[in-house]
Image 1 (tube, one colour):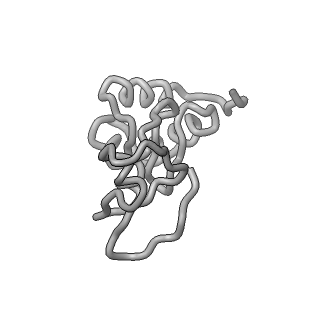
Image 2 (image 1 turned 120 degrees about the vertical axis):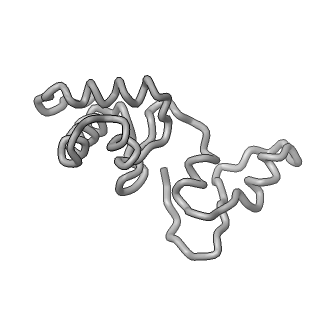
Image 3 (image 1 turned 90 degrees about the vertical axis):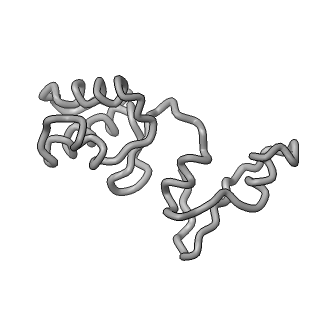
Length: 116
């Protein structure tokens, strides 16, 4: 793991809250309701945890635990009001044995491709 800047203990407490509540994918808003911390403390703690490689930043304000590997919920959270589509949907429903390398999600609006 990378060297992490000096911890004030908040990051350890935040990681404990994430673990205790089994939050595999979460946002800052989720932590604001669970932790008695300010927004700036949470941002600093999450940044420290990202630098340590304990969590990943999916996009601004959305994070994922390091060991979470289910790509379908991640795809649905990255694209609001979406559904798993095309080859990914066929694999999800067991209609093909081939495992796609890309998860396709369809929505009524456009969003740039994202690699995670």
